[in-house]
Image (cartoon, rainbow over all chains, first blue to last red; front, side, top):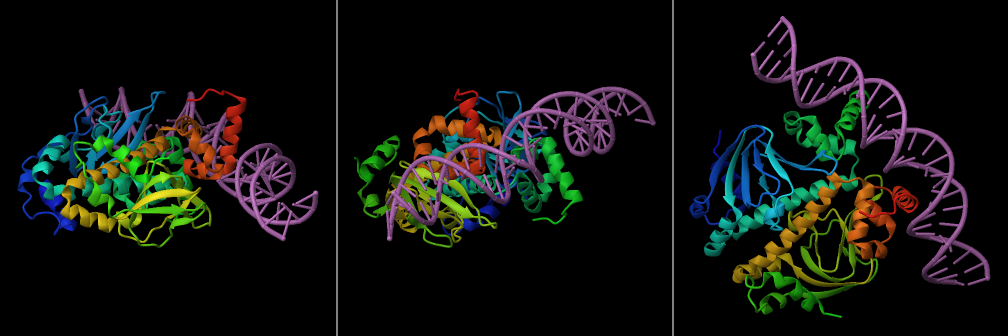
Length: 200
Length: 200
DNA sequence: TTGCCTCGTTAACAAAAGATAATTTAGCAG
DNA sequence: CTGCTAAATTATCTTTTGTTAACGAGGCAA
């Protein structure tokens, strides 16, 4: 099993030539964090501006609606970044809760600390652009799926692209992320079993 | 009426202290662009990496689905940035079409040129972060609405937050952006007129 | 004015999703 | 193994949306 830093380095391979070879000053400020299953990483109302790279595990970002129901905004897994956009982008208390769905290994840095580093080491700026673009691309991809696809199509696509994830995460969270109820997802699964078993 | 540069400067006020007072080198590379109603700004399959600030008007980003229907991913209006995320983030030909819904005034820069400027003028980096974060925040806000709200609720919110926009843009594009059909939006409007007229 | 053409509305029906509750399944503690 | 609990499924009914088509209003060109 690779360490967090190894995996991240691997992921940053695309930035070779742009990013300095020596990333010591950067990683010196990072902290490894371990979360147990169901442990909360960021609480609602929290103001800490933590940014983390997920080395292992799945984190769910969700909010509690007025009616008391939970709504899952997104799931993040190994190889992705996780952060409270409310606190980092809008400097507001987090309206979302970030919780581990299974044991999680993180490599964490405080965004304010990162900004300090970037002041003295502007050569690491490509890194910030990298994860901002990565998160933007992921958000737009999800947005696109809501506009162009039906819930069933979104589920089929999720199955074909992230089969492992679907099997690791309880259906009710998958349903919520697709914008439907667990009951509805169950019916979609039934329809897929009986009729056209062909995937996307 | 303010010029593009004035409005953008105004918007960059938040960046005062971070961004150099002299933005001449930056704006020297920008080009004003005018689009007529229905004029296409970026075509499907296009590879140009244009990035633009919208001074005036509305631009619609949409794609053609397999069944031939159009799906509107997003609308962008004055004060926002517009760019093909396929070409800029993923370096792929644009899968979306960007078209003016009314006369549009843009302040345009090529992203590759911007990157060159940033190499020699790293002090402008906050600008890149600014628009990346702005676009990310907007995307996440839309994503959040899909997960937490019904089509009717999304429409009510759009009405209360962007009443001017709804009145400027044909309903069918609004519907598509909400993820529903024009017929369905018409029914929602009818329901709102008859029953509870209370907005969100 | 007349004749298109597009857009929004309405209607009628089918399909899908929401709400609620009962039932089954599965995982886990004892 | 038994019993508890949460998750998933199923059933029933209501509401909403999709689909298709018809209709009417408004804009625009001849």
